[in-house]
Image (cartoon, rainbow, N blue to C red; front, side):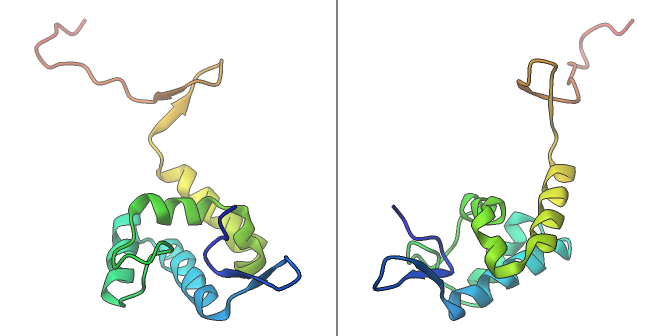
Length: 117
């Protein structure tokens, strides 16, 4: 099991908040709620020289997206901020779901060369 960023494992085997990383987690959530895209969040972390959870110099958009979606961070940022981010993420997504629950784009792109009726 991988320990989530912002937490540390105690000697008795429970998770405890890592204060230094928790500040970064709060900053990521706040920056995203302020309107920053995943790419802008990645750029901000790189400029501040904050290492990724794997220790690399640059975070990936996928890592930021996963962090923003992980409900374990409710313990750090609170339920209201977490739900606000989930709402914001869903409103920025261009994927719709059909009646069977399968993902599909809500807009159908049609080639300009096709005849429109």
